[in-house]
Length: 132
Image (cartoon, rainbow, N blue to C red; front, side, top):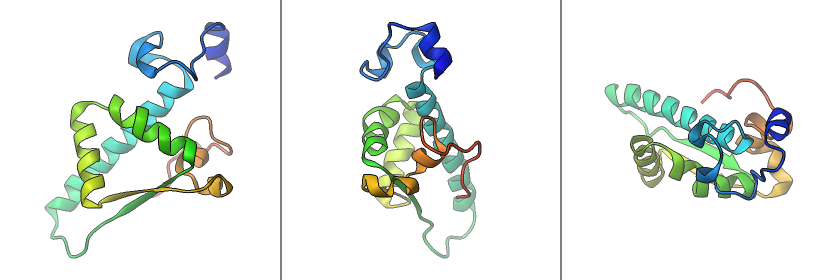
């Protein structure tokens, strides 16, 4: 993030919509980093769901993602709309059928937030994703 602020000192990346950033989808700002991480998580979930469909489903698999209010808003307002159509559609279907459950948790529990814990810009950032 410090490198981005040095390269673009006048650019207010927090208040400018993601599609207006320099470099388009390859912008090095934290917002686009977050979006790229979300796309990778969706791709991983998609691959795993294909494997699960091939097997006989004995029980319904569910994934619960917990987001603090900030990341909850960013996920639905910026991350999902910026995904490629295929992954955006699969994400919306997974949310509708209940395969993926998104919980909005209060700020007091932000230590349980998926992106505060593992994503860019969070506190106590880790380099690997949690087991799903």
